[in-house]
Length: 126
Image (tube, rainbow, N blue to C red; front, side):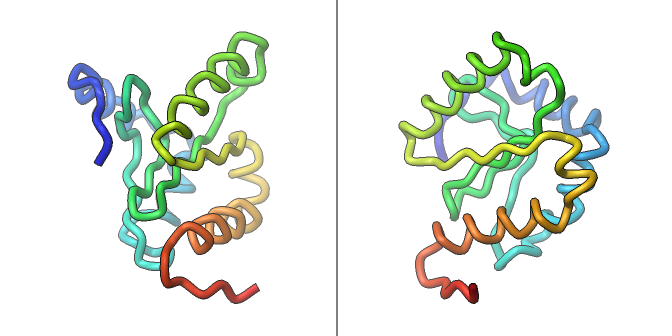
């Protein structure tokens, strides 16, 4: 596991209880190792950030973004955050709330594709 700021533990617990509808939908599909037996965590502190979903075995972070991420400052903050996480060897993929809610199957297919590419010993069935 990667290090994180201990002060983020309490906010992480709070955020797990305040998940958006999109995050709740995605969590129902990712929890309990439903995808290729991979464990996902939600609202996981990493470095000085809180990531929406994290699969350590695949080195994957899945972010579900609200409208605040579409602003210039939001995009810049996301770029800095992604760069810091990628320096740890992690891959970050992003979806917006509407994608998750309206195109759930396509979102899950993309997550599956990335997980299967990043997991050693998994044969993709494309």
